[in-house]
Image (tube, rainbow, N blue to C red; front, side, top):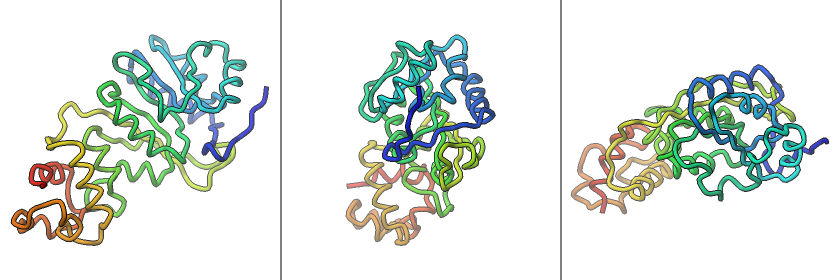
Amino acid sequence: MQYTLKKSLGQHFLKDENICRKIAAAATDLKLPQMLEVGPGGGALTKYLLEIKDTTFKAVELDKEKVDFLKETYPEISGKIIHEDMLNMDVPFEGQFLVIGNFPYNISSQILFKVLDWKEQVPFMIGMFQKEVAQRIAAGPGSKIYGITSILIQVFYEVEYLFDVHPSCFIPPPKVMSGVIILKRKEITVDYKSKKLLYQLVKAAFNQRRKTLRNATRSLFEDDIMTDEIFNKRAEQLSINDFAALTFKMR
């Protein structure tokens, strides 16, 4: 059975066995009892993940053609594949589980925020992203690519950039480099007033990142609060702790 590639689903399938083994090895080292692969596609990584011992494996795949291909090619996946949109699915396990995958590039950021929704049950995530997206997730204050995603992920997770992946490792080759990162949930997170206020503040600050915080977030604070020197800074100069602390001073 053959399958077709669907550009509309952002499909770039891994073909490099060495890269697949490296990703699977990173997953094995975590020794989690449950694992969800997102977007297994043609199963290049899946076949290695299925070999990991003492782990309950599931995969979620939106494309019916790929679901049928996987069932036929890897009979051991029977009963373990969920034909659904990951962005709309319920939590697939009780207890802790790893999220892993070569994520479809057109929804990779949305997958990250889905993981945030599940963060109480997801201590680790290993994901392949476009390199610039992976670097943005891992970026720190002062970097030009430090932004909304960097902060909202790093409030809850430590981010480690593992390695680059060349376009030639995929079918079809994407036009950009890719990168694999691992998220490790923090045991102690920063204190903030509410997730809603944190998201509101970070988005307002970075949507006008060339302006000072005073000008970018004026509607969120009383005038007397905005006399603080921190409001002379631009968003990229503030740490996660700075943004978290400011949520307690918002209107």
